[in-house]
Structure formats: structure tokens, C-alpha cells
Amino acid sequence: MRAKGGLAPEGYDKYAFEPFAVTVDLAVLTVRAGELEVLLVERGQEPYAGRWALPG
Image (cartoon, rainbow, N blue to C red; front, side, top):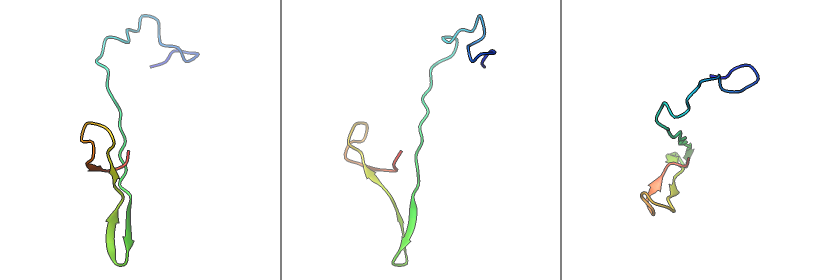
């Protein structure tokens, strides 16, 4: 919640809640030669380095 001017309200404690992460994955689908295909990327870093995953 932001106070007027875009600043946090007085007394707001940003450490009162656990931090969280936001991620986004995409499912890119197409039909080629009558076959359904999905775009995958090979992970370059852990976790799961070398495994196939949705881009995102």
C-alpha cells in the first residue's frame, strides 16, 4: 500500500512479512505437420541443470 506521493505509509514495517518470489512460465504451443508441439528450453543452471523446462 502506498501513501500519497508513492512512499510507504509512516510506520510500515517491510520486515513484518516473509519475502516471496514471483515467477512466470510460458507454454508456447504450435501445430506443425499436423502434430502439436511445445517450446522447451534446456536448463543451464541448477536446480535441474540439463533438464527440459518451459521457458520463463
